[in-house]
Amino acid sequence: LAKTTQPISMDSYEGQEVNITCSHNNIATNDYITWYQQFPSQGPRFIIQGYKTKVTNEVASLFIPADRKSSTLSLPRVSLSDTAVYYCLVGDRGTGRRALTFGSGTRLQVQP
Amino acid sequence: DSGVTQTPKHLITATGQRVTLRCSPRSGDLSVYWYQQSLDQGLQFLIQYYNGEERAKGNILERFSAQQFPDLHSELNLSSLELGDSALYFCASSVDGQRAYNEQFFGPGTRLTVL
Image (cartoon, rainbow over all chains, first blue to last red; front, top):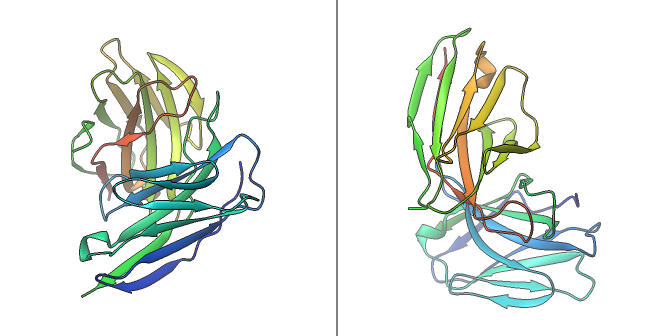
């Protein structure tokens, strides 16, 4: 499985855009990039997934450059409720390796 | 609310004891996954069941076992408990654990405290 590297923590203020970058130099051709969000004492929650270029949903955007060695999760206009740990995961979307491998994640603190 | 339920919410027990954690997946989901989250180890995959059969094993100790029943609910059994087993135990479910990636939906977790 490709190893991921993310910043341990980030601070932001309400209303700002937050970009969290994840490095995955050894990403394989079949690997997809997935982000999960976890609030304290709650289970992780799927945010977004992508393979290349840009993916956007109602919660976030995911930017993936052509070499796919990194990806950036973008949270527009964060609020206090976006304070959470964000995990970047890389894995095969095909058969096998269904379990999720979580790294240390990025702890985002949003201040008023 | 993810649709995944876990009981009990909290569990306090003593070293050497045995406990059973229960998980009911979302309606229609065939795969159940168990994860352990502790302060020093982070979120770790333990085991996966698909439609009643064990599908994948992670860092699950021999003292731990799990099963998935015909109605698709799952139980995680932890025996000979040690202080280090204190953690949050999450269950997750997904529609199909065999082929294309499916988003996993996590339950609220069971907080186990071993004294």
